[in-house]
Each structure stands twice: as C-alpha cells, then as structure tokens.
Image 1 (tube, rainbow, N blue to C red):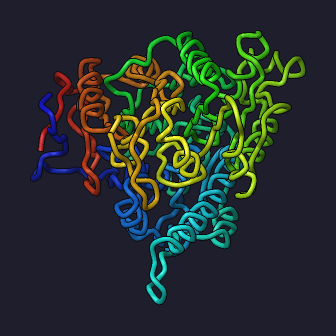
Image 2: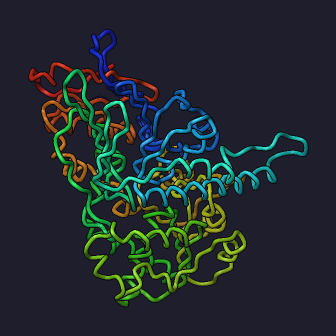
Image 3: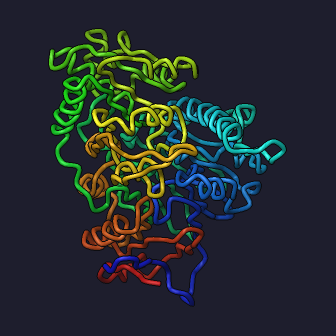
Length: 499
C-alpha cells in the first residue's frame, strides 16, 4: 500500500440508515483517542484522550472539542492513560454532564492521572511563565486545574468486566480485559437495527501476552461486524518477552559500571510498576546490587496503592508471589512526591535509576532530570516503547544533535536506548492473535491509534485475514456504517478503500 494513502468511504455512496462514526482523535497518529458514535439516536464517545505532541500544537488540539459534547449521552472509557482520558475535564468544562462508564480499577487510575495532569500543567506553566513571560504580558493558562477534577470524578459509573450494560435506546456494551494496564478494557457494543442484530468492537489499547503482573488479553467473544482497532505497532515486532529482562539489566549494569544515572521517562501507571518488578527481580536474584531507585512522580505512591487494591486483575503467577516477595521493591524505592524531593534526586552521587513522568518528555518531572543528564556522556536514557512524533522524547529517541528543554538548547551527549518489548502495546502479530476470533468475512475494520505507515500496514494485514474492508480514517472524518451488501451475505474479497 503506497505511503500516505488514506482510506475512507467513497463520496456519493448510498447509505442506508444505521450507525455513524466520527473519528475525533488518534487518527493517523498515536495519541488523543476519541471516537463519537451515533446509534439509534444515542450519541456516545469512546474515550476522551489528551493529544500529546509539540506544546503549541497539543494546546490547540486539546482546547478543541470536536463535536457538541454537551449533547452526548455518555462516554465509555477504555482505560486510564492520559491519551485516552486526559480531555475528560475539558469535556466537563464544555458542558458534558452524562455518565462516564469505566471499570472500577480504571476509575481509580484515571483519578490519579487526571489529578496529576492538572498539577503538572500548573507546575510547568508556572515555570514557563516565570522564565518566558515579560511583566504585564498575558500568562499562559492550563487546560484545566485541580479544581476541575471533582466535576469529572462524580460522573464516573463503575462497570466490572463481563457485565452487559444498557446505555438506553436499545444499545448495550460489555467490558472485557484488554491486558494493557490495570483496569484496561476493550468494548463490545450491541444493538438492533431494522430487526437486525449489530455489533462493534473497540479495542482501546491491547496489551502483550505473557508479561509480568497482569492477565493476558481476554479473547473476543465472537466475530464482529464493525471493528475500531489500535495499530500502534501494526507493522512491528517487539521480539520475545524473554528478551526484555536482559536488555533492561544490561542498561542498569552500564550505569553501574560508570557510576552514572539511568533516566527512564515512563508512564507512572503500568509501565513504572513493570520496571520496578524487573529491578526487584534482578536484585532478588543477585544480578545487580541494590542501587538507589527513584520514582519521581506525584502519582508513584498512589499508583502503588491502586495496584495493591485490585489484585483480581493480576495473573496467576503474580498472585502466587504475593506475600513471598516485595513485588515492586517498594521497601527500597524512594518516591518523590514534592518538587523539593524531586530536586534532591539531582544531588545523588553514584549509580542510580530515576523513573520519571512523562514518556513524551513534553512535561513533568523528567524534564528537570534531562536538563542535568542530556549533556553527560556517561548518563543513559532508556525509552520503553513508542514515543509520538514532534515531541522531545521522539527527538531524543531519534538522536537529534541538539534538543530544547524548556527554553534552553542542549547538545545531546548522553546515551539513548529503546526497549520496545517493555511497551504495554501488543505488536502486529500479537494484535492479529488477539483479533482473530473477532474477524470474519463481514467485518468492516477502522484502523486508528497508529502512525500512517503502521496503520496502513495493519489494514493490509486485516484484509489479508479476510475482512470485508479496512479503513484508515482521517481526523474529523466520519462514516455511515450502514448494513452493507457484505453484511447481507454478498461479501466478496476484502479490500482497502481509497479516497
């Protein structure tokens, strides 16, 4: 499939009455997940995520609500990562007052993430206003502040995995375990149209198989008619999970040998716990000494508490370990909750590991550590998976010679590595393994949450697997998912439609 080819429904096609999908985020990119569905007169958002990218562009996109959010009946939230839940306060400020459905664990994760997002926005903009705004000049304002979060939390409605829930107007949904982070879910919608039963599966983000702590993704219950699927690694292989430990251990040994710092820009939820699990394993097995480990995020302590409260999400191996070892090495980890505690980390001498938010390096505590480490040849930055383009994290990951942190330019002299296997996202083969039970000759697939080459390659994989059609939608495009001839028993070869 040629580079840059977009896929959409052809103009002028006759649509029968049915479901409309408006693609409002994470379209031909991997951030800002949001999709508006209109079914039987019901207006429903799947996710309301924050776009993460270059500061000015992200601010513009995140202040924009793609549809009249006040008239939406509900939001169904796949999980609590910022790029899936981070615009909920913007929606609430825009007048949304409907229920936000999520799993109980996702409600707790989203609470932590949103509070942290509000605090970090305020801290970063206070910092920038002091350094870049002249007296009397208008101050930069955050998208939302801590006072906005309670208005969102009171809208949460907890729904456990496997419970079929009535949204009204003959539309039902069910959460299934996606194995991505604590509480993450994929969503199956069911409804009736003109006497015909219809359904849609929204993957949210799908996790890897055989990873530490969480269960594997639950298999889809049946083949679906409509599919909205992520494609973060739609044309990529992570390699075996067994390779992750040795790669991380080698990075740690590298800084121990040099007496330097290992900086890990990371999500505070999920990925941080996985890294701590590996470090604890290395220490327990005497593969590394117990060097200082810092988690520099106000979410650190809160996230650990949440993980301890929802052990029913753990896999059998992790549940068997409870009580026998310190799963995340919390007894030896230093959590930096305050800004002063964060600054003290930079006075640490000798080898240490600093895990700090955020993975994009566009905001958060990690920026202060990068300012100190980026020009030190012995220090090492390890990224744990995909980083969106046009971010400081991607520029570091790509090895650009000079990078800007806050308002200062620095030469990139430190070492930079990426361990893709630490990603919480399934790779292409794992996505196909997960989706196999959901695919059939009548399946219409919409490929989102992936850069164009990844999304287009995964659309081609789906067509090769026999789906009726695969689409890579553009931002703010919409489709009428009518009862197509393929769904009336007249299916032909799968295809990828072009604009």
